[in-house]
Length: 376
View 1: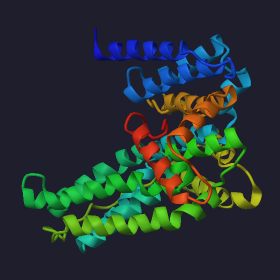
View 2: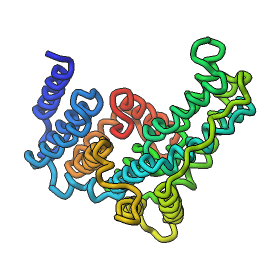
View 3: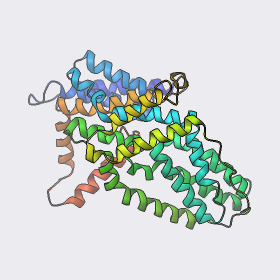
View 4: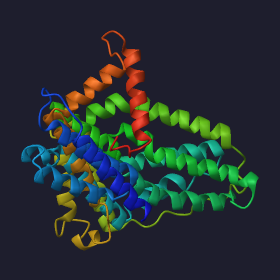
């Protein structure tokens, strides 16, 4: 029996064990089924025993068949603005890839970075953050930017064949990787964990997190300041003279008519997103409007056939399931049971924010060791 099958059997057994645990009469009838479903689903996401979208579909089927929660609660994720933000963002990302706009912008940022290593790393970080406003997926930004950065490293003389020269190359790769993920956490639609956070806050507590407010609260410190610290650390650890400073990444590719059209569409979208604290339109609905504009014949910049090779839409099942799981746990009463257990382990008291912060940070770190960031 393969490892995946063993894990699957173990998770089924663990879920069954949770379901059969003796409980007091004060606990509602839906609490233990909801906990069992949570153990199975989160276990599948964390271990990869089943692809995330398969596990997400299994979650919906099990929740419906065993009536663990009302239908409107199970499918509450589909009503969330966060779900549609991901859906629209995928269309925007595919459009940027098909039209070449993403590669064009990446080249524009890195092609003249040959004066010093500090300028080189600074330009890479700024370019990655700029792409985060356009492409709402860290892996897509890495796919676009990493080949350009590696090509630039080769042309500047940072070869991988010697230890000394590869040090500068390593710094460029690390700067690209960290800047594509960690800094864009301050931009609401740029990373999946942000969107899941916004969706859970909306579905559980009715708290709507706007694009502009989130950017204002997060970007100065967890965005810009983190970027400055990243540049300083990379430069301190990996700096070295550029072997061939006369070389650059070459001229940028020619931007097509569709790419120019997409640049206008995305520019308008960013303006609407940034001012959502004024007009109140949720980022998800703006993203869907942008997706429709990208697909309209004549005006659009991408064809439906361009989506045949992308697997990004499988993420939609995962996002919907993550959002729904929180609602199911809360509505069934399982959330209260988990909260009581955490309170028993650690005393959360008003007036002791440091203790509460460290406790929740520790819980989050432990969960993240076994689950993906959105799942955690």
